[in-house]
Length: 349
Image (cartoon, rainbow, N blue to C red):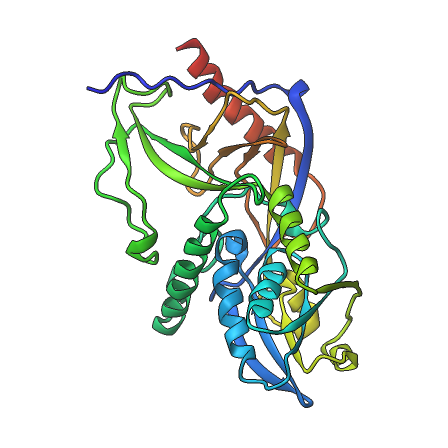
């Protein structure tokens, strides 16, 4: 038996809430789109539909999109969208000798990417497992391996990327290493199963895994700075139709518009997964994350906590095909109450 793990409980109460945010994740049941097609003499490369996995996968799909752009002799490229997918794609194009202009209606801190939790979760809200194809699986595995390596190289205060331990709670003894066969072995980290008396959570078992944490406000601002420092431009502009893109001077256009691709390119499959976050006053002594911890929840209902410098972030909502940006008060209450029950039990135990 290991020595008992000691962790500081999160102080959860309504008077410690400093903000609540809503983000619409761009989900496609068959997964993200990554392909090139002609548009009246220009080349359009699509790179969108990452669901809740954009923070995790964007360096990988960005590199693959940039390599598709190499088929064009002209080295001027337009990137449409300034979230994490657009910014990392712009950097991958710059690394391959392209002069890049980003065109976007919004920029950080007002993008959907700023509203993410965010950790390295490359399958979060990404794909319906029964809609996958072998070709898409191979493309995904290539993207996740590239992105995993790139994010490791950016760890440190400049980009707001760090490693912390995550604890998943259960009353059932864990068996094996999980059932997610989509992830390649190269990105799987080891785990330790902590039994009764070895952890402070009000459950029989806690599964400890190292997890990469990404702090969006720091990370996205750093990427913007990198794009501009390498000669890139950012132009505030909104496009109503795909034909509007023909007015651009750049012959290569990379579509990183996320949910915006539904209207811009008429993708009938694209839909939002509405998520909302509750942010508490920061606690410097909390340096671990959690997922689970609400007994008797219906299948698919969950909560998770991530500590960041801008606050303790509580999440656990995913409303399929819901377009409203308004806070769902019932979900807000569920997430706050679930975490309060969990951490109050830690404190009293």
